[in-house]
Length: 217
Image (cartoon, rainbow, N blue to C red; front, side, top):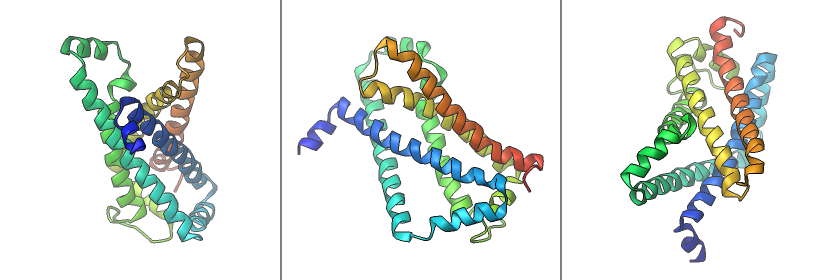
């Protein structure tokens, strides 16, 4: 009951968003690092993918943690957003929007784009149901042939731009939620959030761009 009582507060919801957001942000970084092995050739990437499936109980445990994190993150975010809309006067809301940066302005809609992207990404490269030439077990082939479709690559690129903006604002807010909101920390927070978002964006976007350019084939 104490947990539910704490969650009912704005602070509780923001803490849930911070913790689940951190879990997802760390996963995104690790996922990107694994995918970048595509530059080392098909054997390296396919071997990496095979290693992930060696321990199915561990793999499904990680997937369950990620699924729970995604659900809790979305639910808490929606509840906090609705609560903010109800509690703020219209004039204040307009003023706050005008003063916000692009990352915070696109946080809600960007989150929806990222959620849609995750669903498509799973159907496209994990399950293969949205892939016209999917070969089970041949991750390298699936990635290359998938990104050879310009519209697919364009969607991945745009989605990762929104993901980067979401990560930037999320990382900035994460420090604030945990109490590191003193002005003397602001520069370090901004630099860290920016670097994290840029690394993720450049790493992920480089793959479809490299396939379209013919550098990876």
